[in-house]
Image 1 (tube, rainbow, N blue to C red):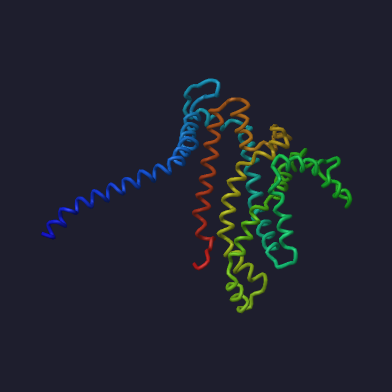
Image 2: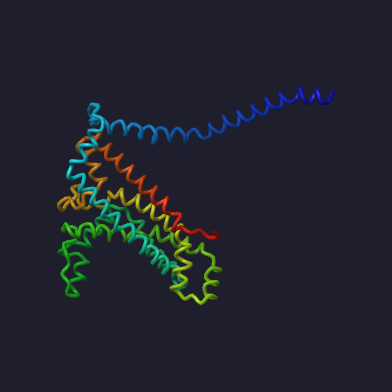
Length: 311
């Protein structure tokens, strides 16, 4: 009788369990629905729409015509498009490694046990709090070839400073220098990574007779590679989207001689100045594919040079 009663109660328990699970699933989706709706409305739908628009001559004011991959083919013969790619790649190739080098170096200096170190850390972090437009105006004054502070200091030691932002040769190096001035945020991340390294590793290195250079090479840098990896990916993505500084300093013109015409600036011009939204969407998808490919490459190679504690 007990066995029979147990067999009869099993379906009831199973139905109750299914009802409970379905209720939990319903409330789970209910609480997650604001995020899901936001993801669909502000990301998924615009993403699919932009790809469709990249295949048309859509211009905001007019629906346009379907041209297939015509916009992508037109980009290949666009000289300004290639110039913007060159400028952007130039910035990425130089800025990202320099930001990592100076970021790690500054973090190691700011990690020293020196009196008043919190004040020094604050000084190096302050530039990140300055709005990009204000920073552009500040550096335009500092790099002014006539009365700028930088050329004034160079003149004091007998060096004639260049035109900086007015020179096709020096415009991009000037922008790199400005951007390096604001790496305080990555320095803070490097400091957190340095503080996360156990002192046991340094004690073991000292026992083996390692000096400062040996500990830096064999302990600090290898165990800091996860943080370097993170900043490398984020810095690369940010560098490819360089926009505010060059746009503010040149008024959107990218002068001199388009040497400051970056990829996102040209994308913005096509979309919101010339109303060639289909053309701009094609540029956006090319940028998306390039950034995704480089990010995947960095992740694929990270196994060879990223080291985690305990592994």
